[in-house]
Amino acid sequence: MGYVCYGPTPMTEHTHDLYWIASAPEVRGQGVGAALVSAMEGDLRRRRGRLVRVETSATEAYGPTRGFYASMKYGEEARLRDFYKVGDDLIILTKRL
Image 1 (cartoon, helix red, strand yellow):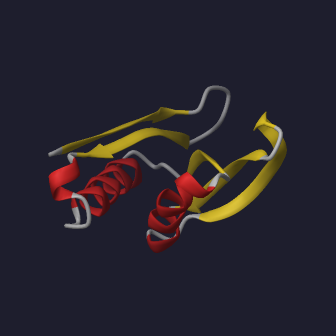
Image 2 (image 1 turned 120 degrees about the vertical axis):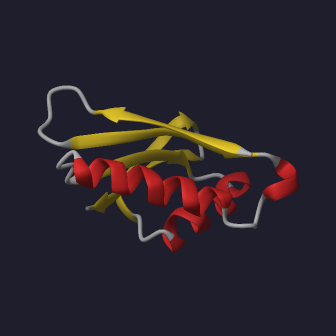
């Protein structure tokens, strides 16, 4: 149905990166992604995690992705203009646990 890939951010104390989250197309919008992120956050809290970082694109195609993270209470922490290519910014989202 889906998977989440995350791990500790090198050279930090209790900060983690959320690398990938995906769900099967036939179950999108049914809470699978939210359940995966919630499970990840619970695991990280048990391990004294304090901050989760996510990187995403500013393009229109990633609008639903950014909306998903906003619904999970991840906020924009930084933006690197023209990172991927001209007109495609890197957006760094974070959530404190």
